[in-house]
Image (cartoon, rainbow, N blue to C red):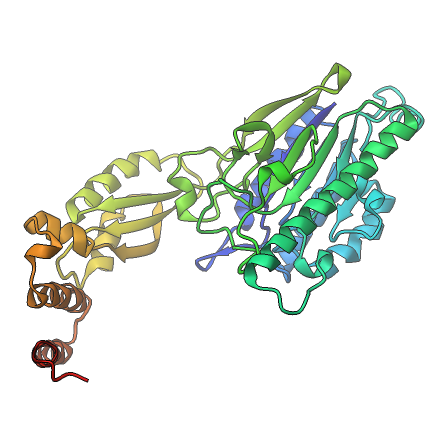
Length: 434
């Protein structure tokens, strides 16, 4: 049996005012063709089908069209809700999907056995499911994003540490209950098939990105990997970069199918899906399958001259790209540049690229001080430190100010602050300060 593990589609995402519809449509078309060509038996989506709880109509149409077309592939589909998904919206279609053989779990069930899904091969000759009495190829413990209100009963007087431990234990207990239900089903039927669990959460030690929203703020930072049940494979969602957890081949994030933020492009990891092959005896082999990139997101940084050289090289790279490349441009400059957007636009005139984010990045004060002269704190007077602080603050203000009157006000304010600081220091040193 061959199973695809994917997650974090985020259909309907609006990225800095730009729709991702063409990219998502291209991914779903590719995924459908891959399922057909590779004769995939099951598809597991580990949360965040949509980017928001109220996705645009085109995003729902994309998903519904994909569901209809996958029915003709004889591929089973197991979907769990993520923190971006609306439970109510997913449940609108869950009953309907169940009747056509698609399992969609939006929230934890009171009966853990309801979250145990059997994956079975289709008989290529008969064109229907094999005899239900035959052992399934795998069981899926379909665990969605677990909201604290669904699994935790609050207790008065708890501090933050106690609440964090309570939530962690509740998540671990829910996983154990669903896993135990799967084990019982195997024992009762004398099955020896592997057990696959899903999840949509942050685990300890993973590399997140700017597009990942903290989902247990104030209660649980990350779930420890050793608190998962001993499933044969754990298919995770929520982190957008594909990666192993705790260096284990059997606990993985598939990552998002398209880059959802500029920082995802900096780690050089390809977008991919996981391909699981269940062999004889239930052993699971994992393969990473790259996803064709429909549109590139890229960050370029440096001085104006360095940016110009990078854009020149970029022009030849983008000649054959159908979709305009989206850029984040970071200018590392201490100087005042009032026509920066116009300069960058002129550089991009012959390049199939568009700047979505343009920002300046100045040297941190510590780095600037180090480059000017090496000082330890003991070598600096109070006046020296305050002077450096003023220099850093007002240099930033002058760079970002185009109004001459505001420049004059800043100069006057700087002089006034120096006078007040001198007075305060004098009062403290003379013992006259309150």
